[in-house]
Length: 455
Image (tube, rainbow, N blue to C red):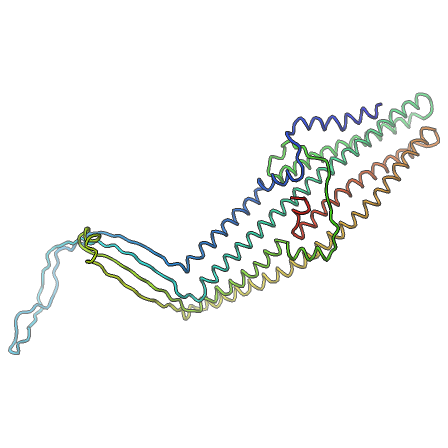
C-alpha cells in the first residue's frame, strides 16, 4: 500500500499541479506553429526576404526611363557699371565704320526670369550592366527565399528536439519515481523483517541509504525537466518561465529509407544547398557586372522647357516661349588607373571562393547524412537490445526480491538487481527518444523535416 501511495505522491500529484498552471496541452505541431510565428531569427529572415524582393523591383531602374520636372523663378539685378567698348564714331572715305574705344556707362537694371521644363533620360546601352543586375537581384531574391526555408527547417528541428527532449526527461522522471517507490517499499519490508528478527539492523540502514540516493536522483531529474521546459519555451519565442503542458502521447511515424535515397533527396530538397548554388550564380553575374565597365555606355536625353520674364507666359500661349533639345551621349572610360581591372579580378576571386564553399558544403552534407543515418539505424538496433535487457532486468529483480523475502538472498543482491532494472529502464527510454530526435535531424539534413514531423 505504501508503494502505491508514494507513487501517487511523486507522479500523479506533480502532474495534477502542473495541469492547474498550464492553460492547454500542446502537441508537437502546436509548439512548432508558435515558434514559426514568434521566433525572432525567423522573423528577421522574413524581413530580409522582403527586402530582396524590393531589390528586384529597384533593379529595373537602370533600364526604365527617368522623368524629371523642374520649375524655377528669380530676379536678375545688375548695378550701374562702366566698361570699355568699341563705339562707332563715323565713317571714312571708303564708307567704312570707324570705331573708337570709349568708356561706356550702363545704368542699373533688373529683369525677372521664370522657367519650367521636363527632362527624360533613357539608358540605351551600358555593357550589359542593367540586364545582369536584374538577373543578379532575382537570383539573390531566390537565395533569400531558400535561406528563409532553411531557417524555418532549423526552427522546426530545434523545437522538435526540445519537445522530445522534454518528453524524454519526463519519462525518465517516471523511471526515477518508480525506483524511489521500489526503494521505499524495500525500506518498509526490511524494517518489518528486522522487527521480527529476520535481518540485521544494517540492512535497514542500507535500505534507507538506497532510498535517499533514489530520491536525490528523482529531484535532480525534476530540475532537468524544468530546464527542458524552459528551452522549449525559448524555442517557441515565449517567456522561459511560462507554464507549459505538452501531450505525452508519442505518435511518431518513421519511414524506412536507404542511404542512397536520402542523399538523392538532399540534392533536391536541402534549401541550404540550393542557396549555396545560387550564391555561385550570383558571383558569376558579379563578374559580368564588373566587366560591363570595360564597355561604353550610351544614353538618350530629351528636354522641353519654357522661359520668359513674365511668369504668366510660362503656362499661357503654349505656342510661344518654348524650346526643346534632343540628343544622344556616349561615355567610354578608357583608363582609370586599373580600377576596373582590379574590380574584375576581385569578383573572380569571390567566384572561386563561392565554388570552393559549395564543394565543401556538399562534402560536409553527405558526411552528416551518412553519420545520422548510421546513428539512427544503430539506435534502432540498440532499442531492440535494450528491450530484451529490460525484460531480463525485470526478471532478475523479481527473483532477487523473492530470494530476499525468503531469506536466501542478500540486500546487496537485491539492490544490485534494482539498480540494474532502473538503468535498463533509463537506457531504453533514452534510446527510444534519441532515435526520434536523430530521425528528425536526419530529415532536416535532407530538407524534409516538415514531412518528418507531419506539418
